Amino acid sequence: MSVHFRRIAVLGLGLLGGSVARAARERGLADRVVGAARRPGPLEAALRDGVVDETASAQDAVRGADLVVLATPVGAMEPLLRVAAPNLEDGALVTDVGSVKGPLADTVPGLLPPGVAYVGAHPMAGSHLRGVEHARGDLFEGAPCVLTPAAGVEADSLERCAGFWRALGARVVLRSPEEHDTQVAWTSHVPHLLAFAFAGALADAPAGAVDVAGSGFRDFTRIAHSDPALWTEILCANRKAMAGPLQQVSERLGELARVLETGDPDAVLRALSDARDALGRYAAGNPDARSGGENLEITPPRAGTHRSESNNS
Image (cartoon, rainbow, N blue to C red; front, side, top):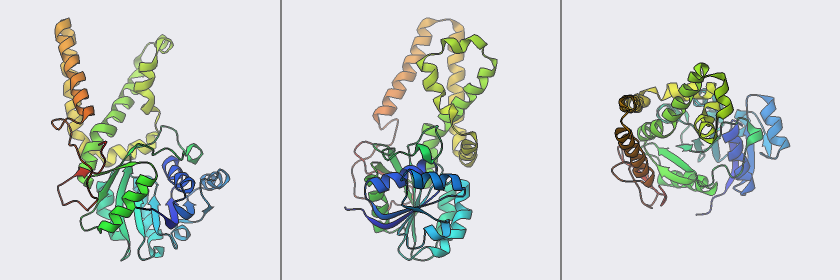
């Protein structure tokens, strides 16, 4: 299915919004890509670096747009839409890049005028780097993009949205908003919280330890360089879904600590081997460890169901 839009409005020009705009321009997905942001700095940088064709206020950016991408922090999307929604045209499609989908599924549809469709999206791509100056046209290549269509969304709107994200290089995965929030709690939000917790514990580490830190330290702590304000919002918004994974991780860490204290190398080996095997099964998509998927026609999911339309899920 060929994907092309007359006008794409990207509201929010950080790393993700900038990368969406840059990728759409580089791949010729729109006649015009328009960016909006609250501060002049990102607008100037986006124009200077060729990320967008033009900039405008949010209200003006969405005029005539047949695709609108919300790329602000999740908490800013509702007030932004309240301002911009009156200028949305009939037939427009609204999507987003929000990391937590439940709150958006509850609020966004009610803010849109008749004839405007919303399909939530979360591209699982990014960096600890911030700002439109780090925007990349290949950021979404090979990355999962989770679509969370609300019940009742038209199949055509879902296919248009899926086609857009696929055209950016992403592989589309369908989930309900609730399933999305539960699953990314495990795969993204808890890992970030653990990295921040370890980084905070370094306040008690001996000063000379940094001189012997290797690649393992850098790999584990990389995401703790992420923006604290952004992650405060994400973690608080998804706190309910994180409670279970945090409890499980806490219990496993306690078990490992108790085994280690016994000084029994065989017991430690068994514990570590079991953990590595569990990771291997999960990463391989073992049905006992993770819900799999198959290549299926894109249609709105029934409540309480999920699937992936990617062969690589």
